[in-house]
Length: 160
Image (tube, rainbow, N blue to C red; front, side, top):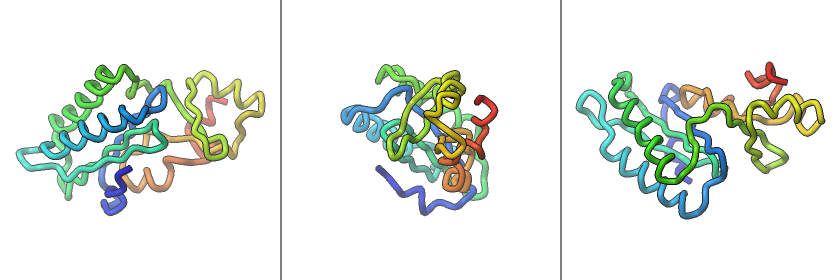
């Protein structure tokens, strides 16, 4: 796991891509290689983007970009999405399906469909204190402070 992002400023952009299943060891190697290669040549407005990424809980790819005061151009953002789509195809995995959500059961991450939240809540499997993952974060500050958050404090609450 790459933790270089911890040195990025709070306003560094962040994109979280959650898988619909856990990555295998081989897939993590492919992901690490492909994203590293991408970041080494990722440019915006003709300048290299200061970017990094990390894999979390064997199910999340988080890409960070420090715009150093300049927003990423649309082409640079599209390039990162194209990379994720290529990884989906190459690994036969879903990374952009926002209907896939997750929560923590003790220290174990559980991957579920959004529609399952209500049933899990009604059955007492999850509750207001259950940690869920808010993949809608947009910058490092949000990632650090609210990516993992209690259900009661998240947008997920409206679905239970």
